[in-house]
Length: 115
Image (tube, rainbow, N blue to C red; front, side, top):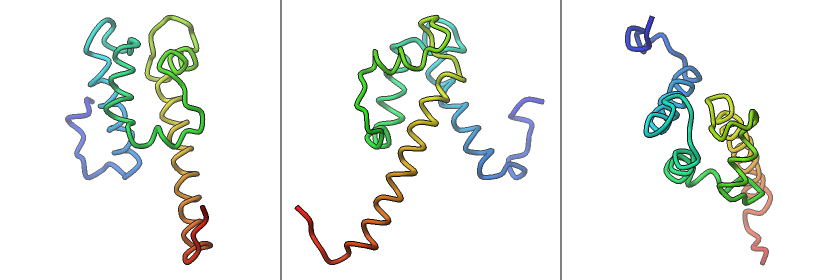
């Protein structure tokens, strides 16, 4: 059964989020080379367009070459869906932590300004 045949009402919030991740991956993976993997160029384009805000929450500021090397577990110079999920997981976890830090900061320091 293809995704188009499933009625959207049956999908949970999390399932919709999963679908969105899969859709975004394919928007970029289909541009050049293998249709189901990202080249370095496709990965860079996806990061620039899709992770512009949240990538800031990851503490280590890696270059695209470092990110590519880090994610390319099977060393085929392509990023498959599972490898791309490592980046999504890392950025999602960093963003989750960031949101807690912002929350804590707002609760503890509402009227104090530290410079």
